[in-house]
Length: 306
Image (tube, rainbow, N blue to C red):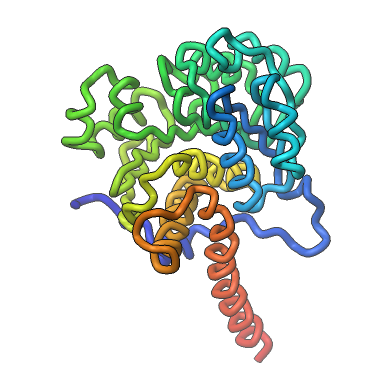
């Protein structure tokens, strides 16, 4: 497609991720706060949180419904888990923004939405958290996108990760309109909301507010499975926490997610692998780039020594 740049390894080698040297502590790799989960879907927050760690973030906090917080804390021992007030529908109450602002302090990346089912409360909570500005970068996913009218002072620091259904609600159009031209939908949303948009699909489009566009079609059909989007949101959040820009974090996140799916398709089969299995594939994919970068640095060192 004219004007759309493919997301591939060659592109990403020109957009290196922040490097972390031996001896650097976990704070140096950034702190992620995942606000998500519900009584019915607590695992969405788990998948996003672990994905952030697998993408290299140093510290993880998860804020979720009070009734499921103890079980989630046992399931993710690497995280500090905070229990929040719940709605009657079993979601996180919108008023929890004040609690989070007071208890969590400032984090490097805030991921809002994975596993949240109460759309009205999730949208209100997302807007309140954006207003508090408790993070350097934000990822809004799933129900956090419902009713989103703007991102205020956080323009340029937000990534949105909708699928066709969520995009249709954001734009007030039918799902068929979005599916007919997902790139146009992504460009409209990115421009109106002044955010980087990852329009998820068989071909995922990454679009900036200025209309620049990239496309990744490496994802296999097996990625269309429960929890896959939660994993992508967490990866992007983890990369933001490490210091990547919203655009770089999104391009890398989309590629890592797709490549993890491609590898599982080769070992497990085209369909049937689980979103949780994507998590362990992320570090090896990143390590492949580290090896190439180290090789290039070795060549440079040798060349400058002669």
